[in-house]
Length: 439
Ligand code: GDP
Ligand code: MG
Image (cartoon, rainbow, N blue to C red; front, side, top):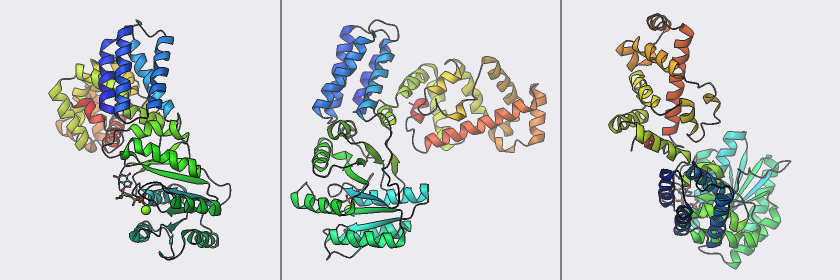
């Protein structure tokens, strides 16, 4: 999905001005990209219609920045399709909050139960209890117990001989006694939806009256994930969806269709097998990801035009290894100057526009000259290893550059912050970052 859409978007951006024929072609590409990615047909039809109407309605055609505007419309509509804003976990006004995991076999229920319990424990200091109510797969109870042991979260189980509804009844009683604030019920799945399973789940639901029924769906199963979601939702009226395995090579279609088809919010996404790999679902971030980092793509293009290729590759490596130093900073500043105002560039990086750390970043060409003077006043050793910059060295540098000491301090601090930011981006969320300078 991503690749095809990105190509369409890239083509579009190159154009600037676009004609009605261009728009038609772009819409065709978008439609194909979505269909190829297993996005539900009705969803695609509606999506394309809305984007087209908005594009025409806003008189994008023939206006100067029209291609950018279409990209923006596509981004906004993608976000809308996926639910607009993040939807938090339903919580009970008084303890316990009861969460029931449902879904097909192998979707990731047990794993997600563990991840969620850990998240609650870490973020809210909660004391969850997990109930092992999958008695059909012999290893299922063991699996939950092992997770519980590793995470230091208690697991209630009665083996495989007791009826799951009875297990839940006793588990709830134990949780009441121990005053657990969250109860996470791990239920059984099947390879496909069947009546017996649904009956059992309906009974557990009736007994436990969960605040949240989280339908766990394997995003790698494409269109069938959406059908499954529809089926479960019709039978159990789920309250939220967890999309798992988004770290894999998924076509991403599930994320796009599932909300419109079920009308239920995606609340979390699983992005790996580790217990910490569970994230709150943000529709806008997913839209950016699908579109190839949203404005990031613009940024990459801008960077590609203006950056010396070899230089950029070297820089990307430095970011990644976190060996970025003041020498690099200097050559970066030279390069960046050709790209336009720094603030504008930073704003294009997803998550940066509203980042409080960016508030104070204001750079005019004079500032850049001052910074350059400051870096020139450093010894080679200081440039390579800013950690050695103690107060007396800073005073010397300030005098050498003819700048006030507070300014030198501020710059060193900003440099440190920038490095930290780069490190954060490299370590996870913004996979596109190295591409920005690399490619
Ligand atoms: P259940 O049958 O629904 O309880 O599914 P499990 O929790 O046992 O998960 C099935 C498999 O999927 C296990 O091997 C998990 O490690 C794996 N898994 C679950 N969630 C994720 C995820 O977000 N990413 C990846 N890569 N693997 C996952
Ligand atoms: Mg399981």
